[in-house]
Image (cartoon, rainbow, N blue to C red; front, top):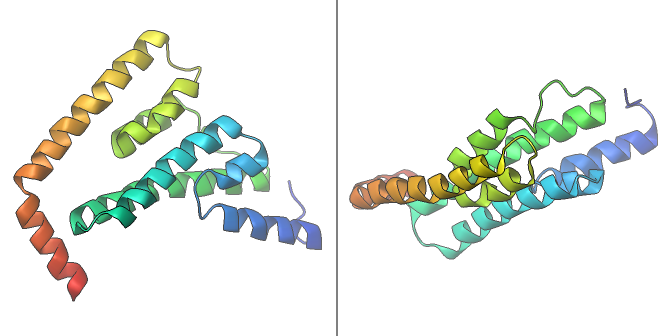
Length: 156
């Protein structure tokens, strides 16, 4: 358990809080390079996509992806700093959830995991693009309606 009252630990908590704003940065600082880089791939891809598009729909989706990657990453860092990890963030369920929510950008999490066989990694690596095509096909079908709704929602 970390003594949160000492000045050094308070600075450390603030530093990790600030690093948690960019999912993966705090993991890199803690020495979990593989997970940190995987989470950075997800968050940087979401931010860049949101910045480079004019679509409210895509910006909304990227915000959700950033949130889906950022909240669990920040919770994990908090648990590590507090010295009590109650959730296994390297579990299969977490990796599958990230694959389904963030798509391609979660593939590094899958491939760095030892919980999946090579056959399962290949299967997920094929399934994720197929699911993405189906998802974006549906979005394409309803793009005008969704874009108009989001434009009204965000424009006031």
